[in-house]
Image (cartoon, rainbow, N blue to C red; front, side, top):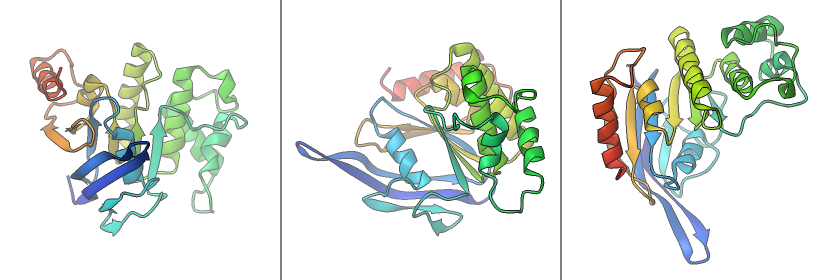
Length: 247
């Protein structure tokens, strides 16, 4: 790993409620190295998505700072792309048009060829002219992955990206993502409630406390890919993380 890509320092966030300010994030600090894959897990409602939105630049912290490449991150940036459970493809555009949508300017060369390259990379060759309503849920998620990768972002912010998929397709998409990351270097920050998903993919897993969230524990995942979740090391790590989560 090289220098820190993301540095989060002393982030606090509260929201207004009927009973006054509701503290959601209670002082979170961490670093993500360039090219590192970090997963954040935590109990439901602990502020995982709020933290992601702050790091990605979509919300402002009440206190604390977020640095990307050493500069304060004041808002969304072309350096980072968000992939969420809600999906982001445009229903009125074909797969190819969706992939070309983010390729603004003239520095991308043949945009259609680039879009088709990434469609093939995620297994959508032959579906370039299809519209989202003609695709299965798994194919839609592949299109979303391709749409993120085609603009070559430094950082992928992933907020429970595969949670709406069935278990088999979820596993396929995890494997697909790791395959692409093996070909192209990106820094990844993943929010998930799925401990096994985190173990399968991440280099490091941070566990958030209940609200107001702080980082309760951090685990390095020193297991080679492809990982067997049934291995004694993976099972031991899973038990340690679940124990932190009170399970």
